[in-house]
Length: 246
Image (tube, rainbow, N blue to C red; front, side, top):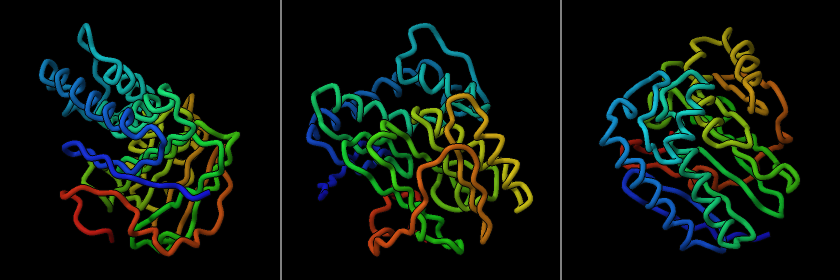
């Protein structure tokens, strides 16, 4: 199946999407960002905390979702923001009648499609590079595949992990737990235990952690296959703060 991918940009958000309801999806990105920014003006601690925080009365749904995911993962709520926007934008397209909605927001992905989707796992300059991918079949979706890294991107990571990827039906949860997993890996010896720990969190299907030449897998994951797409690096979305893809 040939998919047309387009870009949606709104301030720091740069998304790569495939859907037949593009306008509705793009409008939802703008709407959810505005709702979240207005809430953060009332509650600045929501934006900067690295641990779960409470919510003020009247918090919008996006803040509520991020709050719930952060509480389960044990991280700050902004660790779930990219996944939240990806899923809520996709849901808007699907609610408008889209047959497919695939949204990638800086390495955090929400998928719904009647056809299989190949998702590459990019580890930067680590030994595996972009050689592995998940094959996600239609019956697995909707599904989220979210990643964190201590070596790529500008998001805060307290660990030293090339790639921490988490799979869940909930993109907020997958995003927040990927941050927790990345934070927990400081050396190769941390990989196995960290992968098992995050895969055991309620709502998480599985996790893949990569550091150098080492990889740890835990839980229920889509089938790992060889990624043969030579354009993988070109397809990585990033903003101006991230610099070039390693």
